[in-house]
Length: 474
Ligand code: SAH
Ligand code: SF4
Ligand code: F3S
Image (tube, rainbow, N blue to C red; front, top):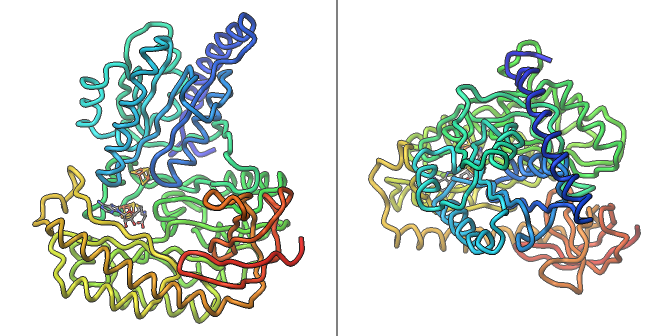
């Protein structure tokens, strides 16, 4: 393994010692009470955070905890936070606030807060002073230190606020407790170098670092052997994958290697930055066996002036060039995007340009966000758009997108599609829900055995958000 961007062998060993100590401690509890201590892991934010939480849960199990789905009877609560918008931070703080009464009832309860929000000094200070029952805090560079911090807190009693590492490294070999046994996340790289002017991620996740291709191929091959059917490769900008590793190959090369694996599975990835989405990548996708014809390509705005102010380093012409090439090579591709409404300085004309791009591109789905100023980012210092205008534009954007998505889904009526079933729908207990190759939601009447398998599905009806139909065979 390359020493350059990975944790040192000594660091990995030191963590194993803490894991073993915690395991002894929890085994003794088990011997005395007949029950294992319980850990509850709560995740806010993006898939990257979900993937990190699966490592936190994996470490909890290695330390002798069982994972519980609710905080009420937990002996350890971990809150993995997000900082992308103000709302995410407020949610994290409010949840941590709610755990105060659990700690009052059970003083031995340990509460840890980790993830993107707590990399920021002002949030650490807030937790230190206003949430005195929080036991330990560590940011995204120190996830691997979790066992050591917990162990030290339990043995010495002092609250711990772990400083961020001077360098953000790749930690291989951490145990992973996956949430699903048929869908999986695989991080291929961490961090971001792009510094889009509105975004906090580069400040809270450090610079880009890639995992070695061999490590990723090994992990994905293992997942396929275990029967995983839908595997998503994760990175803030997967198109930069490999640039920091000499002789490793780029993201298209990685996809090419993974596509060679035998098995019945879909491979996806997110997120791609339009500034370096290459034709080579699209060519590999188009001729692949396993890569889903689905592309998430955040546009953010349809105005070139706003894109410049956002420091996105592409313009609408470049964006359209990628979309057109992609549709030429994969006419069935499902295209989704992220849009920010109300970026500082966004005029009515800029916003109209965004609506015009929506009409031109016709995305299958959009994730739209109202701009939220992030402390320490350049855009937070710019002249802000009024809240009322932001809300009004947001509603107009949604209305247009709903009409487009409804229209885009109609040609699917009558088609037979493969759907990976997720079990009984969370919103309608009479139906089963699943996802198509294009990642569209499909509803149908199913049976419990469908969960985690591919079913053939005929589309009978479609609206902006989902497809409704019948299962035709198993
Ligand atoms: N790395 C990915 C996105 C990560 S964040 C990319 O570059 O596309 C996910 C989305 O959150 C972004 O695409 C953006 O649309 C949105 N976002 C980021 N910062 C934001 C902010 N300050 N306010 C509102 N939305 C934001
Ligand atoms: Fe944020 Fe831009 Fe990096 Fe995406 S590419 S994480 S939006 S800075
Ligand atoms: Fe949030 Fe961190 Fe992801 S800020 S969106 S959890 S990278």
